[in-house]
Image 1 (cartoon, each protein chain N blue to C red):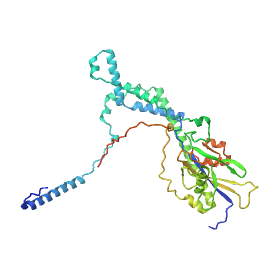
Image 2 (image 1 turned 60 degrees about the horizontal axis):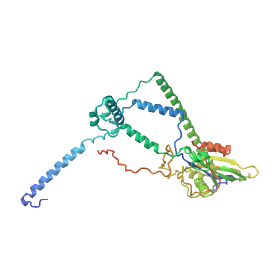
Image 3 (image 1 turned 120 degrees about the vertical axis):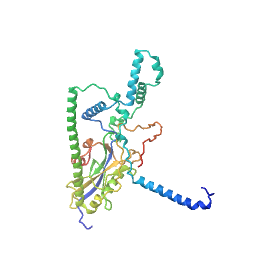
Length: 157
Length: 243
């Protein structure tokens, strides 16, 4: 800060500074009014190096037997999945019916117990569970040491 | 509430499930489909960096063998080839031994162990005295006035497995009911029969060393329930068990 300013110039400087501040504020307002830039989704942009021609795989063409086999397999898969889905739905319906029956019987017994049973359980959710893996955990396994550095690019608007 | 006393005795039973630790084996249809999907994905894909590097190195080797150009070799002196890297990775993979999917308990069919049948749900069965018979049942105790049925079921679990069980009970409502009438010898006006309400819980910790097991117990899968439970009881229990 320059304190060695002669007293005559003080007012003029203050006014100049105020004018500068107003100009800066006007520029900021203009920038804020402009629409924010869209954050690019990196998964949707293929890097150019993967569209070069030498990258195309050269495999033998499919024989008609092979394509027949594939079409038939896809149709069988469709049927298999449909049966699986129907079985799941049937199991869920049986579960719900069983619970309904139990609640009805309970109601016949006592209203208090019924009220306690249909109350929502607050501690149930959020429910967390680790899914199954291909092999069970190895007892006494020593995982290799290392540090995981996250290099995802974070965009701000 | 001044309701007349009902002639049914109430019991709360807990169906404690140990969830699967490994994935179920794929069926034949699923395996064929998986192979087909992989094949199609391979056909539709382009070469990756690693594969391009491998192809270029193959070409270089071929050129070296056909015409003995030392300058080419000296210029691009590749110390490690992609092929060698792949061999190294393969070796490292073969050195790792994963835990077996079929455990010792499976082979010896030890039904009291929790390490059996890691790919399916296991349920707890205990031997209880009902009347003058010893039966295999899901752990149950009689309801006492002043507690909810869920509390009864949790008490049943604690009675047979001790207090240090970490289980997540799925909700306040019962999942199923088994109603039966007492044999004519003990049936009275006020004591017609009993209703057993089933609750479901997931076992959270697999460490039961602290559990004080007070009676004969078994951990069985849904298919093996038929070996131990009576048919009527089994029918009602099977309704609320998803395999």
